[in-house]
Image 1 (cartoon, rainbow, N blue to C red):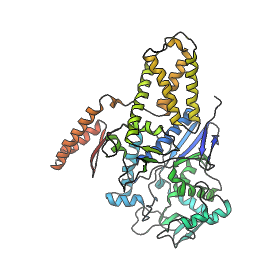
Image 2 (image 1 turned 120 degrees about the vertical axis):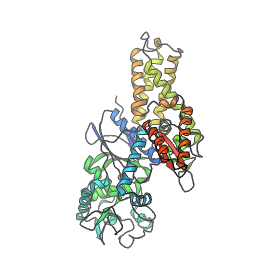
Image 3 (image 1 turned 30 degrees about the vertical axis):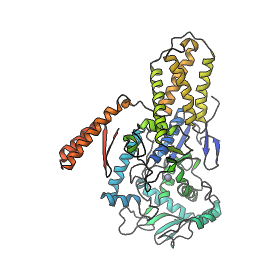
Image 4 (image 1 turned 90 degrees about the horizontal axis):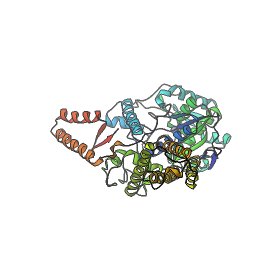
Length: 496
Ligand SMILES: [Zn+2]
């Protein structure tokens, strides 16, 4: 095959031929979750997008090392600048690391539900404090950071004088950033310029998650961990850095500045960004109710959907749009995706059973099928164009159905073409798109009804403070792979 993989590099704002730094190998770092609450559906979309990219790189034969971090310290809230983990831990009355474990487990479970493959390394920020302190020191030694009252700030202006690249990835100008950056509450008087950012923060007395450093007892700035952990596991320069679009600025911009400030080299060759998930044409937002959690979408327990959808139908829905496009979740679109997914999987299951019984003829169908197969690979080589590859695979679905219904005979195609179609189609469906068969397909409504009934019985037990019965139902269902989740809004369930 002479066609090559091209990827859209956010940095250059154009498609570039993918040429890895070490031939045959691909290093990919994707910013993972901050584990202080349940993963949002929008984040699921980002991780599904990079899962397909991970899978396709492997399909092309690259030896891939996929690193995706877990942020468990240092990510501050936008408004009050509290550590997100600490704030939530107080609210839930848990130890910070207890909270981190709880939401990491839930995150992993969600990744499994969507059939996302695990990264090869999943480092945590708190496990890399020594390396983070070292990098702060390196940046200080190179003159791109300054200390104020025990906190250390990255000097964006001084950095930009030398490297002239601050703001390039996100397309912002440092002069504008200087005035544009929101009035920063407590750090304002400590920072020299509004665009400077903390790489080490002095902790106050109440702060629980803090470590010794040459500057103060404190904690690292959020952006630092990704610079440090990508360098540690992928080297000073690696191939792909990914994340959601919203991370371009300031997170990724600051990552670049830190890496260059410390080591003099930009970390990633290609920057890939996944776009936003909308709902009913608008940004998802908790404050105006335009939001839905993965579990609500599974159970249908939401005013935004008429029924529940399976994780694989949702995955199919996500792949029906290009990762760089915004994707609009609507009930109608979900219904369409559910039908499409079913049709695709039925064809896959038919094809698995089918054996060639023809006469080795080469007809125009033969050529046509080969063209479709080539074009599926071309689609994916074109910056992972999953919607087009899915559309092409549906042309094969037509052939599979014709063969099944005997509207076409094996005599009209050659054995090699049939075998190639079988292998390629099934590889795309299962290994590249990452779909799996959902056994629940047979009688979903009956099954759901039974789980709902058990939830009703359990609610009754809970109201009567009969915790033994309530826990028994929960635990037995869990043994069967059905997880109940209690919240203010009631109890929802999901299958693992
Ligand atoms: Zn990151």
